[in-house]
Length: 201
Image (cartoon, rainbow, N blue to C red):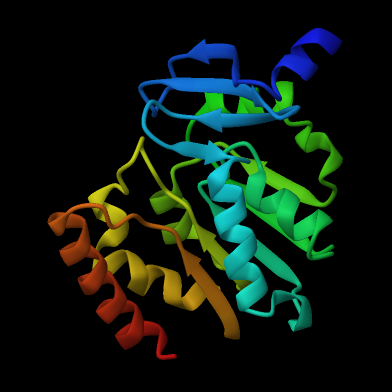
């Protein structure tokens, strides 16, 4: 209501808390008049992460690319898809993969993902999807987290090899990860080296 909307500009309001099927804890907050989705440790959709994706899409000159098909692994509440549609004017088909049905339910309840036309949203494991998909994409976004960790299977070279046939020749792949510890830094360096080897530039 109006009072909550106004109050959210003073401090964040917790709207709903729940246990996900994949993520142990999920929280919808109202911040500055807008909903965001958080886990216990990090922002999942529409908060700081939304701004980071916006910055990297801008730096990658996404507006100048011809994009016919987009794949989002780790759809969340639709933050990336909304950016592509509403700020970068990408009208092509978007395939969203989200393993947690609770996250999809929250996306429908609070984030109005029905407004995103030409969207195919599948409740499916990303690894299984990649192994069975035969389609090619101009843009692939990987945003696969459980809380503040990317599951190890998605950081491995084998997963990148399975992704490679899905990316169009001049396509672009975005891989979101975190580097807060020495272990994460080592994983990132290995990931970057493997991406360079498999995808080239």
